[in-house]
Length: 215
Ligand code: AMP
Image (cartoon, rainbow, N blue to C red; front, side, top):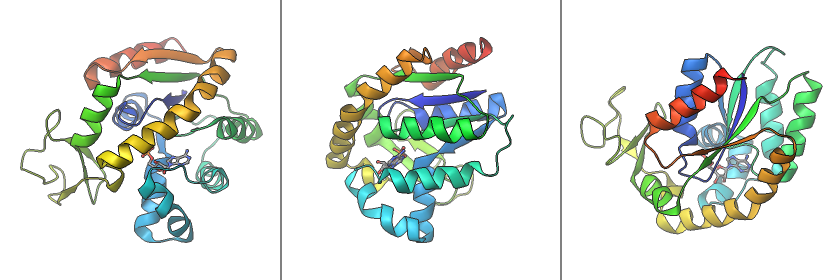
């Protein structure tokens, strides 16, 4: 199974992708996580990407595409994955086609997680992330057992720098500018399926699993 999760920041792509990868036994590829890992390790890519990410702008396609190609090098032609946060624009969608074609792979579905603006702001402003194991929490919807401490590893939770209100707004502007062309692209290829993602995570997950069963 190879799925792309498409949707605004706050649609729940990361949460859904993690659950789906466990249920469907396929890899979760998050370009945001891969980039944040590079920033944390202060690699060459991390140094180049940091400022874009802190502003909520897209990291240049060339850097992200190269990172994805390198990541996919460990995948065999039968391996499945859930792509979360990529492609972000039409150029990336076309690059992805070329990358996958070269590996004899194709995408089964592109799941568009349709989310209202009120839900996006509520989810992102309340999101907290474990600094060590990357698990997402939400101060209201999915609070940790102890205040601001990760249930799994006991390390402190943090707010992502790009989850501050001003940056959220810019991320939404960037998202809206690019998403229409992506939707058209995958609709024309009959790959796009829209799912309402305002519901709670388990409800949305079930809708996607049901869809995956049809592939
Ligand atoms: P995310 O975790 O998917 O919300 O991504 C966080 C940030 O990483 C984005 O705001 C971008 O700065 C950068 N990023 C993640 N994926 C991509 C991508 N496919 N293309 C460009 N920038 C990306």
